[in-house]
Amino acid sequence: MINEDQQLDDAVKKLNIIPGTRHFYWVLFKSTFLISAFTVGGGMVIIPLLKKKFVDEYGWINDKDTLDITAIAQSLPGIMAVNASIMLGYKMSGFMGTMVAILATVLPPLITITIIAFFYDLFAHNYYVQMALKGMQCGATAVIIDVGLNLVYKLFKKKLLLPILIAVGTFITSLCFNVNPMYCVLVDAIIGLMLLRDPKYN
Amino acid sequence: MNILLLLYWEFCKIGLFCVGGGYASLPWIQAAVVDNYHWITMTEFIDIFTISQMTPGPIGINAATFVGTKIAGLPGAVVATLGFVTPSLILCLLITYLMKKYGELSAIKGTLNGLRPAVVALICTAGLSFIWLSVWDTESIPSDFSDFDIKGIIILLIAMIAVKKKVSVITLLFGSGVAGLLLGLLI
Image 1 (cartoon, chains in turn cyan, purple):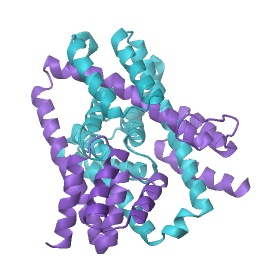
Image 2: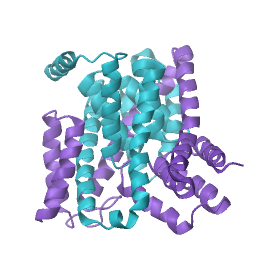
Image 3: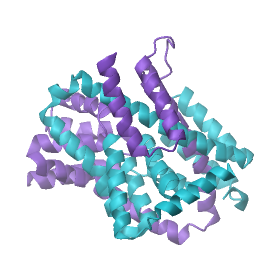
Image 4: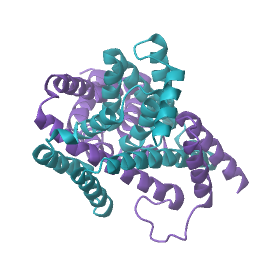
């Protein structure tokens, strides 16, 4: 694992795109735009993909901040993917980062739907369009699984009982009982507020 | 009132009140654009829902764009989307500011410590329901596991290997789209 982390660090150093530079904004825009354009699904789908890009490929932000931002994005009103990109952008490079990220998140659906609004029938019943979308869905699935397993691995490696219980409990509740994630998040926030204030959990 | 201003304002309200994301925003959108203003019909609204499920992009932005286009063309689409994200922008920046100022408080840290494992769990749930969707074409646990889609399995396996080989996310998404198309032609 350490070896893997080191490889990752090396990859980041080799790419060496520093937040705040003009090149950074271009790469941020390009990658967010393309992920938003190719990802079928809402917040919990697009965020792992952004995480994979920003954290694992470029090293612009870390796991912990990304998870915090995801939790806050889920709890605030509005579109989760948009909320997340606003805060991720800000965390990486301030207000400019926010504007670039939000534009790149919103533009692809805006363009796609404007086009589809005119060609709805042609699009909705076209076999090849559906197969391409299906393929992209499988690709996104692979990334989400990878990001999910990686985070689970890190969570268990810390060997702290309560956070593991929270994760397992939330997983079972949302999977088996179809509870709205909002309520899970609310309950977990209260548990955290009451029981996880010890610095060892930070 | 000017139709563009009205669109902006209505989607601002939707953006402010829809908590819970994704499908939770649908009743709000329906209440405003179908029931209240009759900008689109219920059938068109269901169409938006169908399109949103199969096209990239968050359902809220898709609906805003579709309704905006219907009412006032491209300017309408832009204005409705802007309206939808305005409350998000203000609230998120406010929260970021507050986190900077009060983020060190143990109460805030504790709350986030509880939320992080929850997010890990929710990502895993999303991953699992996406496996159902990719391989069995259903959003919940498949009732018949033997009724799988071989094309889905093939692409998923190749994509998993590609992820392990550290292929870039975008190349991966694009590649699996092409793979889907090719398999669709072949099988």
